[in-house]
Length: 399
Ligand SMILES: [Zn+2]
Image (cartoon, rainbow, N blue to C red; front, side, top):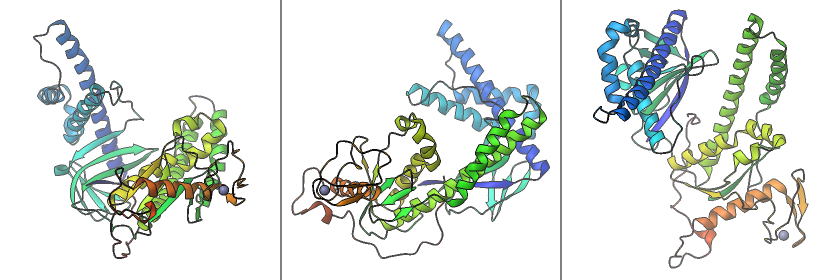
């Protein structure tokens, strides 16, 4: 199974210059190959005897001319241009199969990255060795054991990161405690509410930073375009964005690890995030909470532990259904936190009730469609016997 660990790098000035140059070389090679591809494709259309462009042929072509035409390419690892062209090949493949748009040219400042194949780098503790450069310090050691596949080095908001992909021989984490099923309601007021009644709030630090974010964005808009002050304010803002993203990612990882460690079957909403984002009031809150990211994390972590995620489809009325008697409300305002069921008279907490509905949905979704003999009521069914409880040391944080 492939897992990736993204680690911040601490390059010195000389090393940072090299990384910038390697990323520039990768970008140049990518753009060179893209324009060659277009040229060769046009030539091929005009004259069908010409060969169609391919990433392998373009890599050979670049190799044969780079010594003479682009000698500066030799100053950085050969992996930078080579892998970039391979990535272009994959981009075209995705385009041809309808998974992605036509490849676009990479831009400086936005696509500052290059990839190393596993034979060209190695890690040792908190260091990574990059060809023609040497050892760079990392903020933490690689967390996964197994065969290292590749490393992608990229710049984000002025900081360098290495995302190292590892092929772990087996599941890197112990399987779930198997406390059965849980429903997770992703919310606005709380990050998530579980059907057990627990709520997870977003980290406090985030709220303060969001206030600062608003202030700095306003300050930036007042700065004169093209001025040095504006550039400085822009970088400051980008760094703050990055800090917020890191805190958010961390808290989402803690939450998704906690949920997948404890429960085997997880019911969650298949949120139509795009549709919800068009509602401007909800938009910021939802974007801040990272619904989509949390769902992604829960899905892959539950797969590691051999569990099961059930998605409620977007029309499932998890909030409007009474989890006690099944009565369904016609409408429920977004600001209503608690409501009394006209069917059974029970007072429902909006989020807990929704989470319980999601749990029930998840439990019933694990029943085989044909209904095998002696399956009994849906909630009795378990996918696997409960494994012995194991304490995992440390949280899993990757991606
Ligand atoms: Zn009811």
